[in-house]
Image (tube, rainbow, N blue to C red):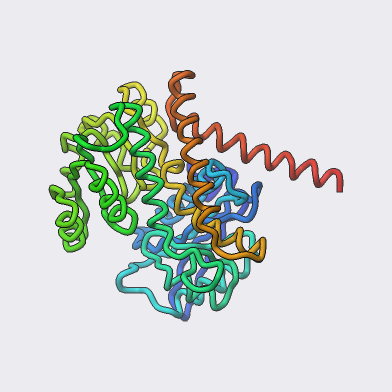
Amino acid sequence: MSMTLFDSPSFANHEGVHAVFDEKTGLRAIIAVHSTARGPAVGGTRMWNYASSAEALEDVLRLSKGMSYKNAVADLEMGGGKSVIIGDSRTQKTPELFAAFGRAVDTLGGIYYAAEDVGVSVADIAVARKVTPYVLGLSDGPEASGDPSPVTAEGVFRSTLLAARRLWKQDDLTGLTIAVQGIGHVGGYLADKLHAAGAKLVMTDVNTALLAEVAARTNAEIVAPDAIYDVKADIYAPCALGATLNPQTLDRLTVKAVVGAANNQLATPDIGQKLFDRGVLYAPDYVVNGGGIINVASELNARNTGGSYDPAWVEAKLSRLMETLEEVLDRSAVEKRPTHEIADAIAEARINAARDLKAEQRKAA
């Protein structure tokens, strides 16, 4: 018997899962709304050449729950959602496809706002914006926040410095070797920052031309994609797709810390426990990489207040996020629990508090 949506191990009481098909453009997409307890669900749109619709469903379910947690831990007045478009972003993108996607988002009436993610650019979102107001991460207009990648990279960089202070009692990265997996939108910005702070970089990416370009300007060593796990490094920085911390890679890593931009780095929760047991500092991914969604949230904040994009608002939220990461690491040490469990507990407490408040307000109405 084939598995249904509600049987999926990744289904986590999602409020809504919407399948979208447009025959004229070939659009096949899934929009998952995990929670609107803290506000409208916000999360990026990923275009990926999934092997099957089942694989796409699993991905969007996991990613949308992750966005609920990421937005809550970043203390944003937003819930969590995500969308995936099934297709090859290099060969199947058309303006008509993203217009059709925008119309699909519009039918949800504002319970979900889409933004950029893997395979989707600011320009793609701008096409969708022509048919719906429910997109974020634009490059034009007073509210526009633009490409969130630099702010994501800044958050990962600050998290790396935080790990260096805790483990090596230093305020920069001099003398430390960092293995960077993936140097795309975020990884490239991050590599520049790590290099400037004194780190020795070893990096890999499937895009060999881009890899050579970033390596040249950061004086990095290049290794084959699978060899990144065997690098003798101090910090592993996963900045590509998720689940790279898994039973096949765990024993190959010799690092003392994992701090990276990728989503869903732990293939399964027990990997987080194993990292903790080995004394590896794991900075939870959705805490570390929250800078991008903070930047996107600034756009929604500007719309709601009638203002414009405010870098100071972004900086205040990013600083607050680093305080939360400090709290996660402190509690992990005191409570002797893995960092991902602590981060989850903080996020869940904030989501539940918002849900309970909404319930009370409904009763009083």
